[in-house]
Each structure stands twice: as structure tokens, then as C-alpha cells.
Amino acid sequence: MASNKWKADETLIRLFQSVGRILLEKDLEDSHSGNISTLWKDADGNEKIVITAAGSQKGDLEPSQICFLSPSETDYGYYKASSETDIHAKILSIPGVRAVIHAHTKELTIMTFDEEEKPNKPAPFVPIDSLGFYHFNGRIPVDWVEVPCGSPEMTRIIPERLEHHKITVLQGHGTFSRGSTVKEALFHVCLANNSGYIARLAQKLDIDIHDLRKKITRSPSRFFPYPPNGYDQYEGAAEKIEGEEEITGEFKKTAARIFKSNLSPFHTGSLSLRGVDKILYAPKASIPREIGGPIMELPLSLKSKEKDRELAIHKQIYEQTDFQTVIHCCIPEAEAVSYFVPPGREKPIDRVVPIDAEGSFFYLVIPILPPDFKLETFIRLLHDYKIVIIRGGGVWSVGEQSLSEALHHPSSLRDICLYILGAYERGLNISKLQPDKAKQW
Picture 1 (cartoon, one colour):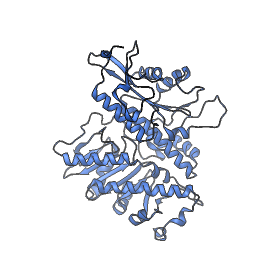
Picture 2 (cartoon, one colour):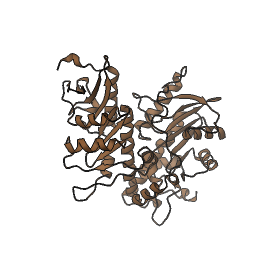
Picture 3 (spheres, one colour):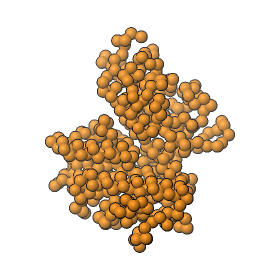
Picture 4 (cartoon, helix red, strand yellow):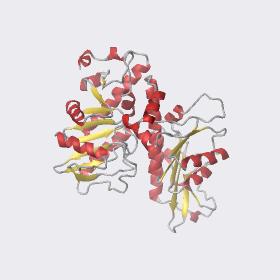
């Protein structure tokens, strides 16, 4: 191949490198697994399929490990293109699809194994969390193939699935995700694995997820307060507030911490800071620094029909309190614990009682509200506890001065829930570990 047939665009290279690092750091790949592809036009307007090289380290991609393929002939960089290039090419031919990620989503893969005789048709995976349920229309298809690596069967089945679904699972191998951009494909991968993680945590707590799935599927509105925003709802919005470099920096720092600390999946949740008559609002709270996300200055007053339900809740909190900052996160551990039914009880708990020393020092209890919560109760509990879990609706926290103050609460809550999950998994009686003073709440 003549070397002048392709030349990597720096922005494209940085995007692939960033997404590759995220996939590795979030344990969605091992050091060499998976692949990333997108459609891209060169300086002459020729469209190429850009895909990572076979065996390349996605977390440490070099420009030479990104291959450029024409529709009629295969061009290679220093490394050979992925063995699953044919699958990617077929997926990228679907109208509206411009990016594909294949990831080894461990949590989702674990939750889609079965013991059935092969060959068989595995059951689809049904998320029990709001993000997964709504973004994937209630189910993620799962398929078994005899040769789950670059086989003709895979090349046929996976594109067929992705014509109608945003993501699909190959049993024992991982997921294939599509999007209009590489970042959107990453979003689907992160959400799907998060849904698998929540379901696995729920099983550890002996929650009957089969029964829960049936009930959610019959009536989602009984289990989730409102559908989440679409991925592209704020597509194209600015990533900084002009003249507010310090505040923009605080937003970016907080969003990066939420992402790195696993307090919400990629591009989910929301952040805000109150001004005199304005609100600074980031509709995506979980964003690594190298990717970036929208930040907007909006009127503080609440519209009669606010299209963004999350934004409406931010404004309602400010309307009825003196808090200066609000954070909404979707903490998977808190989501699972909110469905916990202690032995001898028939209904899920209505509060989280910390069993660790630091958690108990800061919080006597953390209240849990049902999906159909009343706003006045929610506001009152936020005033009293500074953090509230909405079953099926994430975690809301507030600060009297800074985003850092509001961030402390969900960060602490995740640790609190991890200790509870670990103690229960060991067979310990959770109620015996709870401080006596919390039992009088």
C-alpha cells in the first residue's frame, strides 16, 4: 500500500486513544481485546472505515495501530486491521450508524451466561435500572454462536441485531454497540455493562430479579420516576461558560471525579450551580476530562412545562431551598441496595443505614423514596439529610456552597453501599451491624 493513501487526522487519533483508555480503565476490555471503528472522510472527501488494528492495546493506541479501509479495497497501517472488520463494515452500512465498538463487557457477559444445552437461543437481557431499560427499549438481545470470533455466523447475526437495537451481546464474548458517533457507541457500552452490574449486585442481595423484571416490563412507570434524557438531547451545546473559567473548571473537575469514581455511567446524571437569576447546568454529570460535555447558563425560574425533567428537579430544589449546588448521580450500588428486602420483611428498605465507621459518623441514615415520591417530601429530606436515594431514579445531593460539598455525599454513599453488599455477601446479619441510634430513626 502506498503510504500517501491515508493520513490520520489528529482529532480522530486523540478520540480513538481517549475512548481506548476509557474502555481499559473501566474494565470493559483487557489490554488487547475489542475494537473501535467509525466512518470518516479524508481531506479529499473520500469516506473511509477507520478501525483499530488486530491485537493492538486499546488503552495505549499508537497512530500506526489505526487502519483506514476504503469501501473497495483494504488499506493497512503498520498493523493488520481487526479480524472482525467485516462485521464492523456491515454494521456501519446501516443507515444512521457511523461508529461501532466491540467491548468485553464483563458484568453483562457474566449475567448473560446460561447452562442450557447448545446450540440454543439465549433469553434477552432485561435491565432492572432506568438507564438501561429505557435506552435499550426494555431488552438487550443475546445470541450464542459456535465460533464466537470472526465467524460467518457472527457476520450475519450481529449486524441483523444492530439494525433494530443499539447494542447486542454475543454469549461468552461481549457486546457490539453502535452509534452516530464513537462517543455514543461508548455510552451504550457503559450503560449496558452498568445494567449487568446492577443485576448482579441485586442477585447478591437475594433480590428476585426475574420477578422484578416481569413487573418492570409490565409497568415501567411504577418503578422509574421518569425516562432519562436521550443521549443527544444537548448535542452541540458549548463545553464552557464564557468569562467563567474558574466555574467551568470546577464543573469539569467534578464531572471527571464522578466518572473516575464510578458514581454514574458515562454521560449520565447532572450538575448545577445557582446564580442570582441564572443556573449553570451540566446535563451530563459523568464525563472524563479528555472527552468533555455540555455546560449551559439557563434561567433559574421554572418553566410551566420544562422538557428536561432533571433540569426541572434542579430548579425545584433551588426554588424551595437555599442550597447553592445540586448533583444527580446514578450509583449502581445504591440502585441495587434500594431494592434490598431484609430477611423477615416483605418490602424493600426505606433507608440505608451505614455499618462502617466513617459512614455512620456522617450519616445516621440515608432515606430512600419510592419512584412516585412527593416533591415536598423529597425537598424536606434533602434539607435534613443533604442526600436522598430515589428507588429507580438515582441519587440526589445538595451543597450549601460548592460542588465539592455536594460531591462528598454520593461518594460516601457508594462506599456505604459497598460495605453493606460485602457484609451481606459474607452471610452477616446486617441489622446487627447497624448502630443502635439509627434504629430509633
